[in-house]
Amino acid sequence: MQVYKVGGAVRDRLLGLPVTDVDRVVVGATTEEMLAKGFRPVGADFPVFLHPKTGEEYALARTERKSGRGYGGFTFYASPEVTLEEDLIRRDLTINAMAEDDQLNLTDPYHGQRDLEARILRHVSPAFAEDPLRVLRVARFAARYAGLGFTVADETMGLMRQLSESGELQALTAERSWKEISRALMEDHPQVFIQVLRDCGALKELMPEVDALFGVPQPETHHPEIDTGLHTLSVLEQSALLKQPLTVRWACLLHDLGKGLTPEEEWPRHIAHEHTGLKLIKAVNERFKAPKDCQELALLVGQYHTHGHRALELKASTLLELLQSFDIYRRPQRFEEFIAACEMDARGRKGLEQRSYPQADYLRGAAKAARAVAVQPLLEQGFKGPELGEALKRERLKALKAYKEAATA
Ligand code: CTP
Image 1 (cartoon, rainbow, N blue to C red):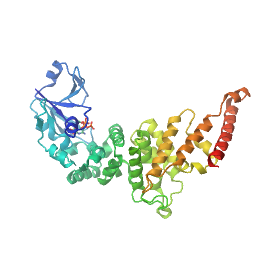
Image 2: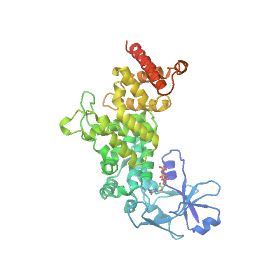
Image 3: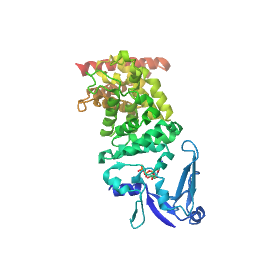
Image 4: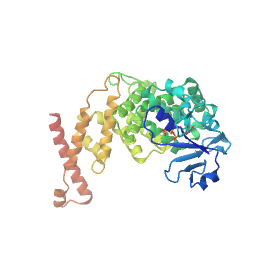
């Protein structure tokens, strides 16, 4: 049997990037031989094994044929006769379809190295269409390598468009899609992920609520970029530039969904978009079964981002309501993430990227003032149960009034 490194490990080594995961393909072996060597089988679907010592993945060379809709509809054929070239041709991109042996001899039948040098993401063969998740993968690689100048080949975009139009993306499971989406959002250029999905028609299939933002105008005075879709891309871009966590990036992507529902006759204004957007944010959250912290923050940012922007003008009572909604006493981190998302929203405007955001420190100060109200004296005065809650609220309101006066004097 021969063993080769394949996929990302070869690609990233040739790009001079650090290699984290190493996948290997085994040619000329049977399942029985692998088991006899102590490899542990994983996954019910594919002939993949873990090395008994290193735990790294070894897959038998295989060909795949489609037998149904979606990812579940795969049959695979693995046998010692399957050649390396046959295994590589069914992979997604030419830059992912190279193999190397222990001596670093490269097997590159589909010209991955040439495409690496030309900075092109190109599918290997029509077998690309066997797994619709690859539409998201290509968009994710575009987001990851945009800084190196990679773009998607026209013919690959064409295939991605066909796949999107075929309705096949609907068959992807929430788990597989979320894995790609969350990884793509954490790349250096997450806005490229959304842009590529939009360009091939996949965004309309996966997140029509985000797709609908393109072509929707906002008032030029506040939003020199005007288009709500472009604004969303810029907000996402800022969130990556400022190294925000996934929760914030997800909230950035979804914060303005309500603007896609505004009747055209009300354009460019979007009255109450914070509220109309909530059901859309909820729908996208649930479609991809986003983790709870992502879901929560996206809804809170959707509902309160304009409060964040108007923080300095808010009445003390409104400020208190805001702080209470975030449960800042038990969830300080979440409020920080809200502030960050608001700041990304403000920065994601054409020409205003560097403008300072004094609301951030003001909100932090307000949270600090509200938290500083001690419970002990109220307990000593005999307050308990709901009355204690009310008394605490009154004290916090007093503290916020004082804070507001001092801060805005
Ligand atoms: N692959 C594929 N189609 C998929 C998933 C994976 O063709 N839907 C192939 C590609 O050749 C890929 C390899 O399997 O390079 C390993 O997949 P994976 O570990 O998911 O990705 P990597 O390419 O290693 O990239 P990453 O750095 O994102 O892990």
